[in-house]
Image: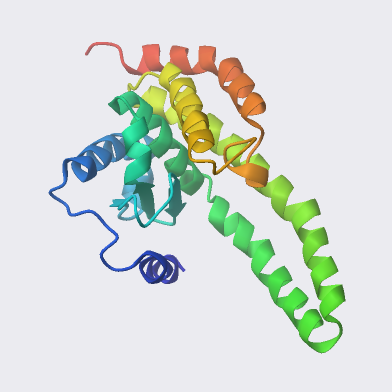
Length: 222
C-alpha cells in the first residue's frame, strides 16, 4: 500500500518534484525528522523517509503515508526555526504512530467499493447520496478526530525530542495566516478535514502544561 501511495505521489507531482538530498532544506527536514523518530519508536519498525517537494508542484502542506513524510518547500518558508518545523513533522509522524491511514482504509475502501457498485448497477443518484452520507457521518468526523489525535501526540513527541512545544502554537498560527494569504482556506486551515482553527488553538493551550512538563523531564542535563 505504501509503495502504491508513493507511486501515486510521483505520478501526481512528477519524478522531478523532490528536492535533491544536498539541498539544505532537505537536510534540515531529515535532521529534525530523525530526532522525532528516535523518541517515537517508529524508526525501529521499518525505514522512514522524509521528502521536500518543490513549491511549484505542491501547495503549502505536509502529508504522510506509511513510512514517508512529504513537506512542501513553501511550508518550510513559514518555519522560522527547527522547533516550528518539529511541530509540523511530529504531527505527521503522529499519524503514522497512531496508524490512522490503516484505520481509515479498513472502513473507507470496502464502503467505497460498495458505493461504486451501487452507483454503477442500481442508481447513480443513490450512489451519490450514499457517498454524501458516508462523508458526513463517517469520513469528516473521523478525519477531525484523527487530526486532533495527531496534534496531541505530535505535541508530546516534539516535547520528548526536546523541541519547544510552545512553537506548535506559533507554527499553527503562521500556517493559518499563510493559507489566508494564499487564499487556500478562507476560514479554517485544512477545511472540513480538520477541527476549526479556534478549536485547535484551544486544545494546544490545554495540552501545553503536560507537554512542557514532559520536555522538562525528558530533557534534563545528563
